[in-house]
Amino acid sequence: MKQAFGVLKRIQRLLWVALCGVALLGCDRGPERILELAEGGIYAGALSPDAQTATIGSVLHGGSLWNVPDHARLFNWNLDSDIDAGQFSIFTTVAYSSNGQRVLTAQGRTFVVWSSTTGQAIFFYEAPDNIRSAALDDEGLNVLLGLEDGSAALFSLVTGQIIVRLRGHQGPIYSLALAADGRRAVTGSDDNTAILWDLPSGMPLHRITHDNQVRTVALSASGVYAFSVGQRSEGLVWNTTSGQIVRRLPMNRDSMTVARFVDNDAMLLTGDRVRKVILWQLTDSSKQRQWRLKGEGLYTRSSGEIMDIRRVAGGALVLGADGRISLLQ
Image 1 (cartoon, rainbow, N blue to C red):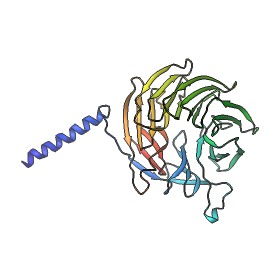
Image 2 (image 1 turned 60 degrees about the horizontal axis):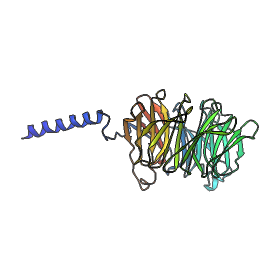
Image 3 (image 1 turned 90 degrees about the horizontal axis):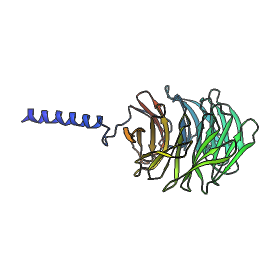
Image 4 (image 1 turned 180 degrees about the vertical axis):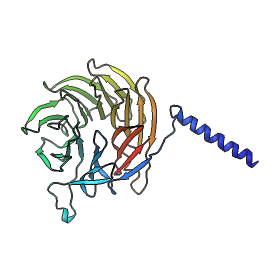
C-alpha cells in the first residue's frame, strides 16, 4: 500500500510539472528572490532600463535610489521637508530616462530631475497642474507630463519652457509613453481613450476607445506598435501608422498597472493590481508564462499593485507597491 501511495504521489508531481510547463494552464510561479526596499510600502517607483537600479517614493522615508544587485541604498531624495522632524517628500510619480542617467520624481505639481550617478538635483520645475504620469526622453533633456486636467505637457529641461501642450482628453492622464526619438507619444486617460500624438505639431494621430478607464499604455521600442488597456477589459495592440488593432489580449478579469514590449516586440510583459505578472506571446495572444508575487502582513490586500517591471535573462524583475523587488524566473 505504501509503495502504491508513493508511486501515486510521484505521478501527481510529474503531472503538475507537465501541466505548468504547457502554456502554464493557470499555474502561477513565485519569485526566486525578494529584496525589501521600503518596509511601509511605496507611493510610486520605477526600475532603470538596465534593471540595475530602482527609485522609489517610500511611504515612510521619502525618495531614494537603490543599487539592485548590491541591495544598497545609494541616495536619499527629498525636497522642502523637515527630515529631522520625520517629515519626508511624498513622490507619487517616478520615471527614468532611456539611458538611465536621469530620474524624475514628482510631488503634486513639482517635479525634479536627478542624476542617477551623482545623486544631485539637476532641474526643478512646477507643472501647470498636478502630475499623474511622466516620461523622460533618451537623454533626459525633455519630459512629458500627464496632468490632472486631462492635458499633457512636453517640457524642455534646458529652457524650462513648455514645448507643446497636448489637449484631447476629458479626464486625468494616468499613463503615458514616449517614443525613443521623442517625436511621438501615447497617453491613456480616465475618459476611456488612448491617443497617439505627433509631438512636433501637438496633433493627435489616432484615438482608441476602450470600455473603461485607460490606466496602462506602452510603446514598442521600434515605434511600430502601441498598447493600451481599459480596467478589466481586453488589451489592444495597435499599429501606430494605421491605427489598426492587430492583437486583442484577454485581460477582462484583470486591472493592469504596467506593460512593456520585450523580446524585439514579440512579447508583452504586464503586471496588475493583485501581484500577477504575465508574459504574453503576441503572435497568437497567448500567455507564455505567468507568476504571482507573495503577499504577507497587515497591508497584503492594499499593497499588491505592480509598480514597474523589466525583462531580465530568463524572466523578469518586478517592483511592487509593498516596497519589494522580486526576481521572477
